[in-house]
Length: 226
Image (cartoon, rainbow, N blue to C red; front, side):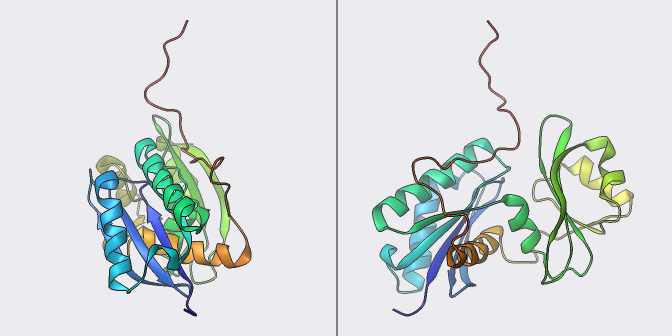
């Protein structure tokens, strides 16, 4: 089989997804509804492979959103990918959630700000140039929500898959364009394509035992102080 296939997995946010890329282009994807990150990921992956007449050993690598994002979601996606890689011999490649969310909107000609969940009262932000030659201009870094609009200038478009409604309304009132989450393919398609590129370059390949998510914030549940 001459084509190289890569699976992309995104379980960093409320709505997850999994996608299949062949020779660097996403060719199919499945959505994981809220609450189905764990129960639906194997079924969705099997559906993608069956649709392409492929088996697990036809997968050269699995790209996984590494965060920031949901604690539970990130652990589910990475644990699942590790298990498949261990059984099939596929390579594990981590893709930062900021990069994946910017890449999926790279058709925007203006700059793009990726805004992801951070500590209480803060968000994790990175600014990217628009277009196919997308490059990171600064970040990611933590920004207080009350300072977000000021810090994002001159960003014209915002990619924030799990923006709270009040924060979204405030940014829209400040004149920012909130990118339509339903318009482009799901985030996993970007993870699959970026994972393919990183796999070819030998970038982002991870040790199955040591790789861990980058949560971007402290856990909500913490040990009590002594």
